[in-house]
Each structure stands twice: as structure tokens, then as C-alpha cells.
Length: 256
Image (tube, rainbow, N blue to C red; front, side):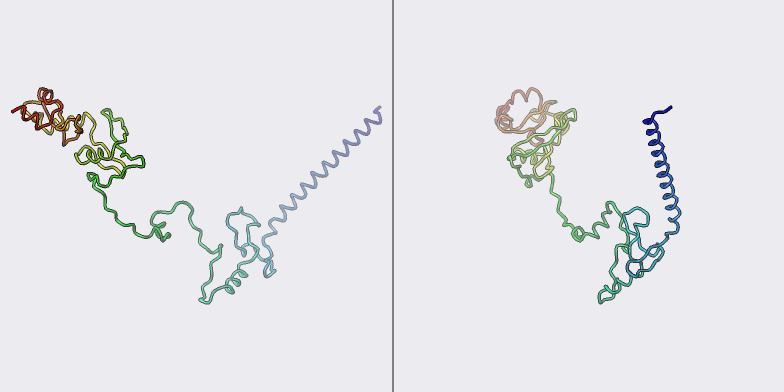
């Protein structure tokens, strides 16, 4: 025998099962009714002329998902009448968003971008390229230096800041070229520069005419000379040691 409390619990469970089953049946019925009504609703009423017309008579909005809600509320004929009334005196009808051709998204080609942009359509003035061996266009940075780029013997690139006077001297004497308004580029590494001077002078000492395999500065570095093709010559080891840091005229008088 069940007690009165257990009987009440069983009755409540039965009622819950009944309501759940009724709710499921009601939901299924609503879904079936919706599916049955969808094919019948193939049109809508125009809010302008209050006439029920097929959905094809209503232009679609762009940028929305497919469905009834993406159709506009005014039919095509009513929209055409409104455009004719709003047309200017010249007789041209303004295009609406639905009638405008869809533009292609993404970056445009340079020709189309130049044609659409009047600023870019203007021809750019032809600027004469500066001579890389003309140092007159060099300008120091805010710190008062010129940047010099170069490479070591193993191909590693390096960077250095030098005085503007030194940069002008290196460019004029053929050791560097102008790479920018504030930058010059060294042309040769140490090995390349040594090979250039020796091959240029045909491995002949400039002072005695014998075989030479060293490089000597005409104006010594101790007196302000630089390692440039215009200031360096091929020399033998004996002449290079005897000249030391003397000037060229002084050394030539000592040889005589």
C-alpha cells in the first residue's frame, strides 16, 4: 500500500508528463503549420499602393541574407513613379542603390585608380636623376653627420657616421658614390681595393719601377690623406718603408 504522500508525488509526475507531452505536440503542430504556410506566402503587400504582389516585384536589399525580409517594402512600379516625379528638369533619372551597378571590391589596378582619382591622374614631373659621383647634393642629418654604408671582406654589411667633408672627399676621389641625400656607399672592401690598385698599376712600383705588391698613400694618412683610388699607388716594400709619412715631393727629392 502506498502512503498518501507517495500518491501525491505520483500524481504530480503524471501531470508534468502530460503537460510536457502537450507542449511537444503543440510545438510540432506549429512547425508543421509554418512549413505548410511558407509556399503559400509567395508575395507581399506594397506599402505605397497597398496591392498584394509577388515577391519578384520587390527589389532586394544588398548585404542581407536570403528570405522575405530582404525584399523592400515598395514595389518596382511605385519606385519608378517616385523617381520620375523626383527627376530634374533635364530629364535624367537619378539611380537608386538597387539600380546602380555593383562595384568590385578590393584594390583597383593602377590605371583604373588613376582614372577615378583626379589627383593621381595628373602627370608627375620628371625629376632629373642626380649623378651618384656628384657630392653637391649631400646634406648632413640633424646630428650633423653623413651615413656611410659598406661591406667587409666576408660580405657583412656595416654602417658608419662620418663628417660631411670626409664624405665629399671620398665621393670626389672615387672611393664612394652618393646613395641618398644623407647617405653614401663605399664601393670597395679592403681586399677589393688592394686588388684594384695593384691591377691598375700593373704591379709596378710608382717610385722605382720595380715589382710592387704594397699600397702607399701619396698624401700620408698622418697628414690628412685618405684611402681612395686617387691617393693610393702601387709601391714596392722598400720604397714604401723608406717613404714612411713624408710627402711625395720630399721623398722624390731624397731619391734624387
